[in-house]
Image (cartoon, rainbow, N blue to C red):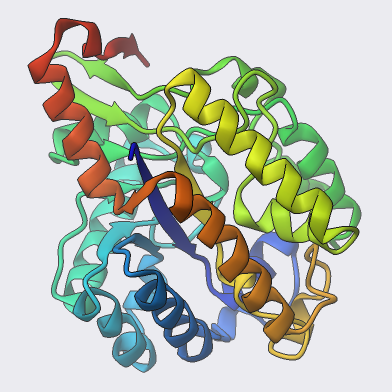
Length: 322
């Protein structure tokens, strides 16, 4: 079967509160002790290895080390999800970008024993400076692009349900991307920076329509109709097979947590349902994905893409200058 990579953005409770503008985030409340065992248990049942993008601030806190160390012990890749989890990396200076990446690298390696080779920016944020720095530091891939036209709608919904001030909204004005992100390719390509190149593996959206179908989106649809959500996923996967796209499929911690686990995050879609319901739905949707694609980590996916390029001229990756 064709490949599909699975990746979890391990955004913690405090990072959602911070982006949402809620007080108390700076005490770094966490649900990692709950979500990581649930996630690893489900992945073990599916018999797949995935990639978990870890936030450096979580890795820097001793209280999270026991939970985070379970990830590589269970055979999963660790990736870099920034240190401070601020979806406005485009506002950072060159030096701030370098510090953000390096500080997270060091904390993640200390907590897990593994140095990340992949990166995903918080809130799908990236910039030429971020990409160039990753390439210069020898990262294998970036996974921050999110080709959809619906980013501004998602941002408007998020702002509507937040308590953010005008200045805070200005910092977050590129959260989930501009509508022009929908023009980006769903196929992997390479960024070019002088002699350095960086593989880009976009988060997959539905071919042709560029609408999201990651797990959080499906769970939101399932609150209205589980049949609708299942049909939507099957359609997206059929279009991926028809267009030759090997999906990069995105997961979030709240896909495995419910209102009974974290009532403070009730502002998120589908967080009105209990954790048992969300776990059951997530198991079903990921099962449908595993029936149609071989599920692998992002590192394995990246290596497969690069090997294919070396084997056949028609598999050559398009090169893009950031």
